[in-house]
Image (tube, rainbow, N blue to C red; front, top):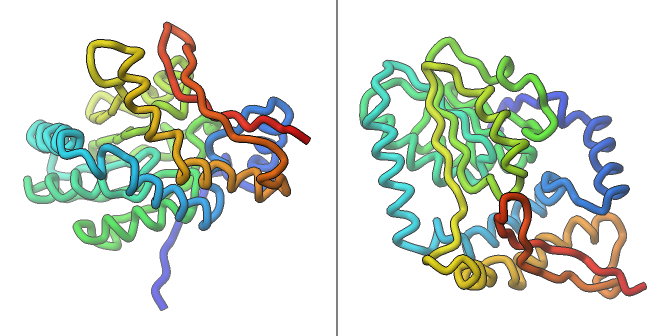
Length: 259
């Protein structure tokens, strides 16, 4: 039977996960990692991503990623490159990038990083189409709370850090310094931003709203509460568009208890 080695950072050790869960419940603000905690939640997210992510069903979005990947591959001249996929998800985008890097010549290795063991294993399996098993190193960590990742992720050769589709999960002023600390002078960072389409910001937000306010997203988000013993009849999950720091808007989901 096949096996896989997965490295788990202390930020995802049980005592720290319990601490973060209690903090989420006390503040009524769920740490996003708890929506990817189980195999079942991972499967629900992958189904949601397949159905509603522009990177999966919008040709223009997919082409934008491919152009960025091609440009990254053209700029990298190192003989060895280590790709670190922060928030790797199912690994589809990272694997497209890895394929281009492989074709351009350098020896490649891949570290799919996520808070979910299941997610890193899915990304690993996807990447094995282009990366040898001996060069694939799944790594489970909480990017928000780990304070020593620069040492844990360092390699002797150049790294390409990907941070794709992740920024909505973090406050920019909190995550950007962490990303900066991970990238050394010889490294590269490939970062995607979620932008509202068109010149009218409000209209653009309304256009992307159905990507979040839909049955698959509700089913995925509710899995966290159902695992805690909350029932669907205990309240209602509501989605809103709200303005945060620097006048940036985002889609928020809140569960309103009625009993």
